[in-house]
Image (cartoon, rainbow, N blue to C red; front, side, top):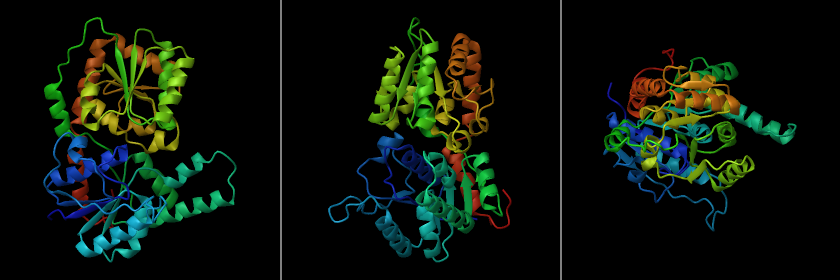
Length: 397
């Protein structure tokens, strides 16, 4: 069965500076690489996709931007409802064969209105559970009402979608348990851009000064559940080691800089946001990479970090939290190194162990690179397109 022409629709601008925007762009481009015509329908943006990908997007990927009315003088709100209406009008005008969506509110709004066009949904978390964990005080009637709304919305999407893709096995299991789904969602971890990876590997020198201090890298957003504060605290247990932290918003950077100053650390370097096209080169400049996720549901069960696959693709050993979400990819001592979560001392021990053993670190990096070669955006897109050629009502995945 030939691959359909699909529309990937999201209410946030793509290309964009966020990890979610990067993931959407990579996936849309991978669909195109797999031979599927793709319309990427999002609010308009001035960003050049080539500046994000480091190359021109595939010719089968067509950008179909819609006006962004949010916070304009005539619509001084952040609501995405105008985009929903415009997206529905676009769907009815262009009649794509298939829709692909990862925004649960948009999917819930579209499903009863798309007149038989199959909608496939990619979920990145159990939203009701995340909402519960974010409640810092006793649940009042408003919070209970919102939780009930989230539950109804998620149930409608998971039951109404033609197929559901979950980032991790743990997330898929939790969805089945909470919503009683008749079919287990297809597990679909994130991936690495094989084209960008090959270009970076072809240009990296791999030359470091003999007396240069070992360099540990964290690259990504700085949300509290990412555990970067634990990584900063781990540096207090290490000497002669540099930590590079790339990414994050100014408020979080300032908070972590304050923590480093409080601990008397001078070896923690904050690089700010790095242009996406330069991320592989930055990874190549470091000796070891860190992924210190915390024990929240999204960190421990639902996330499939983009940077994990990029670290691995560049042949870097990764010291990461020993959590179910990461154990789905990392095998301790074989393609990565797992340590007790939220424990600065254990994290420091893991870093110290691998920095002291070049042979072991190199072997782990080689296996990580070999595994990442099978975890590309292109292979991910092909799995989705294969699924779209089957009936989710009869296939047990």
